[in-house]
Length: 244
Length: 319
Image (cartoon, rainbow over all chains, first blue to last red; front, side):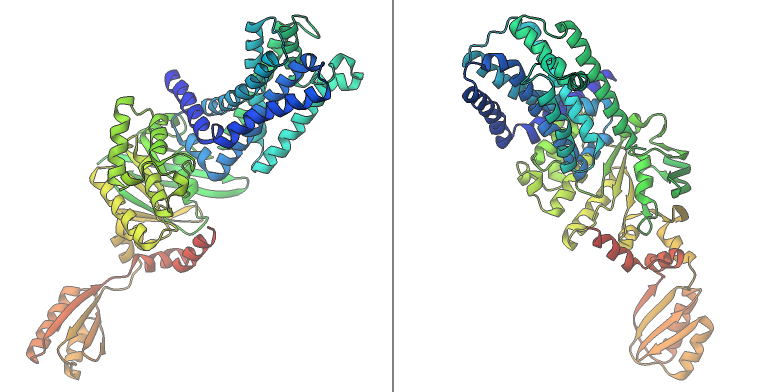
């Protein structure tokens, strides 16, 4: 039944937030990470922070969603706790969605703090708050589903961390966080267009500054949705395969 | 009694290895069914198929009336599972772990608190309700895992090595709790490497070796099936004389040691009558009498060729 599935998603989300995400060390890291990031960049370039705001918010989203989520899933698999969820009368899709939403909520907290710092401290003005919120939500869901894909692909916690970094660091450097994609050499641009963060940064830049860069926001939204669906479907397939 | 678990030619291959080999058996409602076998015999794989953690390669099974291949969600609603590892959430309290399980199994909101309180009382965990799972002792963790498996009032509970790794006191207390489940007509499908535990708890036992079922029967019938006549042991007021020994020999094989007599007899009644008559004729008192049968452990060794001690060492060594 759909209602049971939705309840299952909600309760897994609540459990993950209580058991893992909203622990004091994580909350303090979640607050410190964007603060330190903002401070570091403002010291480096006090006037250029407004320009960097979309990239920094996207970067906070990357680390916020993927840092804990991949660990949570692999840790639960290791301890056998994931098996408890697989024994419950809900589908693997719902289990996975509960997990993805956990990463999304935590990422929302971190990127939200980064956004507040950008607006209140560095006077960044968001031209389309509604589209900005939608694109942040879509970015978080997409990156969180990438975190889930990493987690279900490996067995150990350290493998999840290593594999996450294979995606995270290239995305930070190639997807327009620091240097606009259009200013990069052609081969690097080609790689950038294969990564979801490119479309997130592009969309956040459009919604914050009100200018269209690579694609319009709607196209970015469609592409990010396709990434989200693809990552989620592959993750679900891998999770189901573990039951064979 | 209806059959609540029916396995028909259930088979599981891992690549070229056959883990469970065309297993067929039935378990009746309210029965405690022991599933015995050496390590790697296919016990856990069988349970994993029955509860939807892995899919069968061939054959099928019905659990609580539902086909595990077609209606696994319905099966999951009706069964509780106690896995071999205590896999609740370390960071959640005893209460929160049970609350999460109740939510996950769709226990109605207005019944959750009462059910949790009842289980905490039954499992004597009331005072630990706020303690985090990670801080509990091994024995208390096992109790809570069993309590969590019962939160949705399942028809059938699958228990994989429920007392493994526990101290003697905790194991005895858990066995008592498992016996209590029978009174509530809950069917228990139990795997254990403690053969005496299976003997004490189970109405029927299946022994599986290399994925194949060797025998399914009551512990008593299994013990008798391996041969060896029952034994009568008696303590007399004084040592018997030669004529008394000769007089007992028609009843069976007789051994004496001091004032103790041991008769291996097909017909225990006949042996007892002979002993009483011959002793009375000589003015000898029969102080106490015991009958001994082959143990389930002996039967297990006879049927599998595996030493139960070795099985325990292997199992404990893996922890």
